[in-house]
Amino acid sequence: MIRQTALLLLYFALGTGAVFAEATRETPEVMVVGTFHFTGGGHDMINPQVDNFLSDRRQVEIADVNDRLAVFRPTKILVEWPADEEAELNSIYQNFLAGEHSLSVNERQQIGMRLAARFGHEQLYAVDHRRGMDFNAMMAAAQEAGQHELIEEFTAFTDPISDRMNALSTPENTVLERMIHNNTQEIRDFHHLYLLLAQMGSLENPAGAEEMSGWWGRNLQIYANIARIAEPGDRILVIYGSGHKFLLDQFIADAPNLVWIDALDYLSE
Image (cartoon, rainbow, N blue to C red):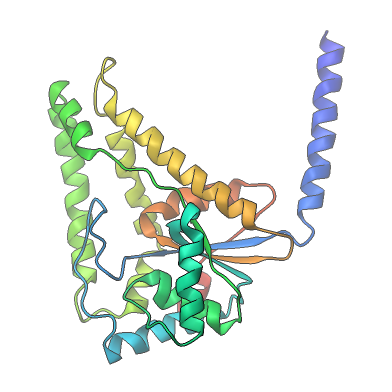
């Protein structure tokens, strides 16, 4: 039995090595650009205010961001749009190409569509997987379980995040400055708040763990959509809300057949 197990492990190791070796040939490169929502969000846990991104000044700043991302030379551009509604996304894109659509104030169009048109892409790719998060249920479960210290710890964690995001959203900060900040380790570390939420509840009502299972699952679905689109030689640009960046980066970096690219290498001065 021991000999059979050893042979099986050796076979698996050799087989895995062959797969890894194959994955190094023109392995798709994937860069996730974490962004704030140009419209101000509205559906996230924290939604900072934004000003008019169609103003002349902001349009110049967005062009600067796009020039930097263009250096990556993306072969495909993926955006935060429901995967099952991709046809609608590309209908808008085709209208834009035909000069029949003025770009609206959101990052999918201001960055995604502009760059896709710049490189002559025939389409954009929609990779979002919708799933809500019942924040009230988690807080209620924590209250019911008497987790008052955990609630205080969560508030102490989120208040500085809100203050930081609101400070960045002032008119004095450029779009580039905000985009750079949204891809720093500091923003990635904000993801730790989800591990506080996961603790909320009890054995009988583990609302936090259940809701966070959904959050991890949603991002795993998004990652799977990205991976399915990637082909050998691709340079994939993913434009997504920065709250997703921690997990998407982790999944992509850990995947044996994808190469993770740091967005800061292109955004930073």
